[in-house]
Length: 214
Image 1 (cartoon, helix red, strand yellow):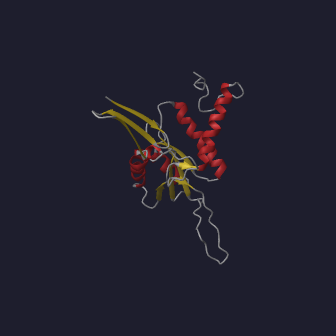
Image 2 (image 1 turned 90 degrees about the vertical axis):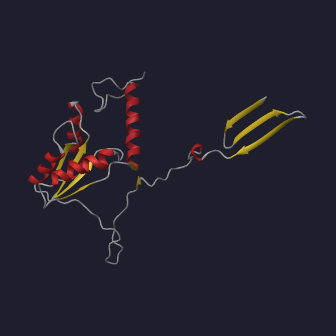
Image 3 (image 1 turned 120 degrees about the vertical axis):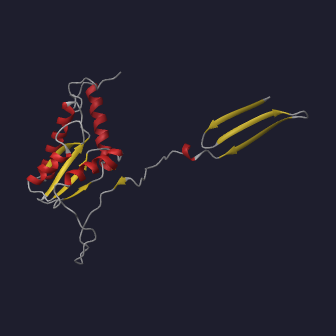
């Protein structure tokens, strides 16, 4: 006869009992739990976490970090995935308008990777027509999946072929940015306030009745 007991705690204790011909013995032993069971308890530090850094003069006429700012000849393309749902695509237009107003950048265009227009090529042409000689393609994506690794760079390169005198770059997706914590927290609070009857539906789910308790 054999019996085992398992307890997943800071340590895993396994107790086995068996019956021998001479006597009944009990043999306890302990082992350290696997690493995947050890969850971090304090503030997380990730190599993927974006930290904002200042670019300032050190007082000796030298620049410790050169700030790369956008100028009047820079065009920005904010590209999302694209949707068959018209309302979803229109939200990108609203975000681009907000981005343009807050940053003051003169040339900012929306683009959809697929399923809708304007395409990345359309937005690229529009930037050049407005005087851009450098185009910054900014993926409106959360994490670096296949679209960021392959699809968007390929579409941007195809668009740039027709304009060899114009340089371009595909920037990183949103990733693990400190400010995204505030965005997610704000969205959660707003939705809970809406369910409680203290706030209207937000622009993301207006008219859908999706924001409700089940």
